[in-house]
Image (cartoon, rainbow, N blue to C red; front, side):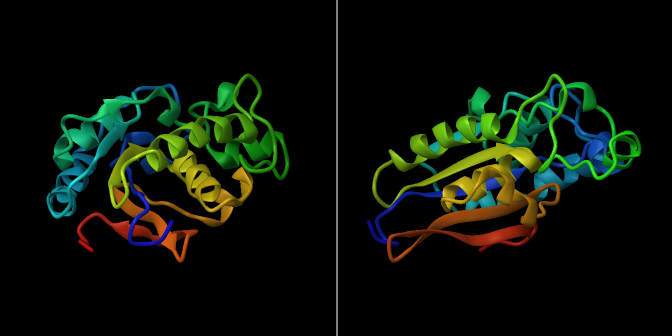
Length: 198
């Protein structure tokens, strides 16, 4: 496998929602995009139009599906494995609120009661990665999903632990590219504003 023949994966994080703006953990809660989020998603059209995709995937959540639609990826296949990390009892709460009760709490280092572990999220993203790597040589796949989920996916793409996603901050409506260099899985671009086209 070489950089010129292996399938690569374009990641798109959904546009802004009211809870992404306020820092509330959002997994199952199916929030719409804000007006800003809709504009952010629309700004991704130039990026999408500049490429062709062998596989177009989206999280089942409304915010991801709407981002895909506004970006020009209306034919996205819904993949439940791309749903955001399940925060369980911490759904809708900010990190500061949780840490006030559980000092030092972080999604990366402590459990979410009633939610998923990092290992469980990794199992899901590993299936997405296998699906992408089964694409034809030279193909590009695209996945529209969520902040924590995509950070775990990027860590797993390069063979790192799921919790290594802690070092990969990801803003709303940004894109990132996972690919290859000399048969080594790499993060080619990360957290690029949606208005920037590679």
